Image 1 (cartoon, rainbow, N blue to C red):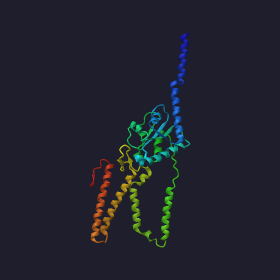
Image 2 (cartoon, rainbow, N blue to C red):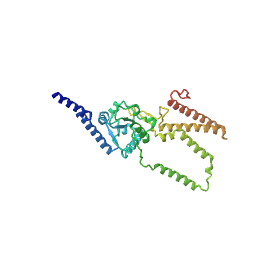
Image 3 (cartoon, rainbow, N blue to C red):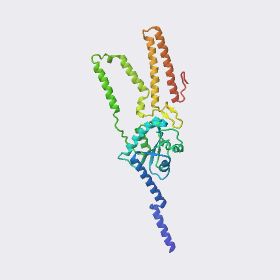
Image 4 (tube, helix red, strand yellow):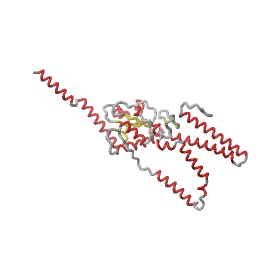
Length: 331
């Protein structure tokens, strides 16, 4: 009889465990998880981007249990770091986080956080990170994969690009909502007003509108701006330059052929303009009616500009397209 009661009791325990009656350990995990999610929701309610140090990172990101994803921006915003790119990236990151925080689809599935180098240098050391800004997605399950590290230098730090990456990693689609910016329309209105005012003041003498040199110069400026990569900057939103927070070294030329910095486009624009100026001087030296001495000076200056700045352009090209075999003056 006792054996029969023991068998019945054993069978009852098996049935209860099968239907998920929580054990003491499981209840502790659920309680801990609930506390962690509640704390993160409370912080997110105060500000969309949670500021983390080493202790918070280990507790809320590294330590189990966790059923939520965390997107973290590793940055260096302190003034002594002189990281201008970090400030620009932080502005876009704040826009993304606020767009998610005030979205009707907001849930506790994804949280946005930041770790500053001066507040969490131990986290940088833990992850073997030596550059900022950087973005990493920590999934709800498992360790971050290669795709969970955002390719900042390729994709730029625009909020829209970050939102696409977050959507790919978490299946959470965020509609980026930017605060209204009236600077562009105001500048355009001011420019049109200045042009209209000048045209009105010279309404009796508008021959300059038919001056081919004016239109040639305008077209040349437009071509130089477009060929330097300004449109790529507008679409991708790359950082102005890259500064290593550990060494303090600033890079103005991107080392990959698939990306560029804003400073790089300015440098290329300057070099292309100098080459163009050299070509103009050579043309004037060959076709103008000035005395032979001035024409020789213009010829030498034109050749010097073309050779020097073209060699610099070629050296930049070689630095970005590794293995390119040709060079001129500069290696």
